Picture 1 (tube, rainbow, N blue to C red):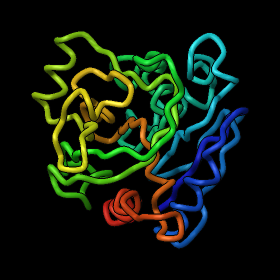
Picture 2 (picture 1 turned 90 degrees about the vertical axis):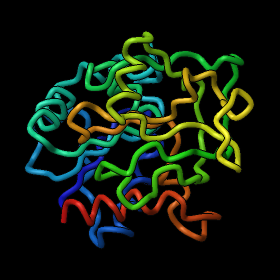
Picture 3 (picture 1 turned 90 degrees about the horizontal axis):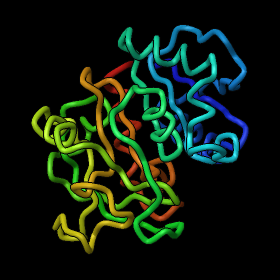
Picture 4 (picture 1 turned 180 degrees about the vertical axis):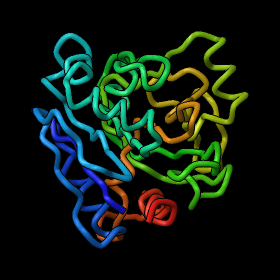
Length: 229
């Protein structure tokens, strides 16, 4: 599997996801600098977490208009798998690759903690190693993770089985108390129509090694290898 991680000024999770990918794939991914205008042949592109361009204007707004992201969008349109994590999810919504927006957390505070997620679908390369309705523990760290879309878009996401993850409690209950940021319908991650683009606010790369305190994020990277190798 040929993978690359986009590196923006302000990225702070690019190395983390590179380590997680190397653990699953066996070889390090290409670290693709934001100024590149050409993207080599790849099976997977990761848009990592962090604070691209200092979150000026809006989170992900400046990064979304770079030539490299036009290339990423073109590759996604051609079927390449694209994973956007945290700020990467924000970038993907700003490019229009995923619907909706990520707004300020409902409490207007930065949230950094482990949360529980209920797997919404196993029908994607990203989630194939999880079971539908499985509860996993994954860290979050964001100030703008409050997912918003109009009711028609939300209904379509649910009707097309494109809600990849929802915030829940340890027993799998999806309710307001388990929602850390106010996201509509407790949505933590969504897929595009072709199911080859996933955006999610939680950080699977931060819990992909037992030395980090858990491995609930590891199946995502193992599943991508199984699907794309």
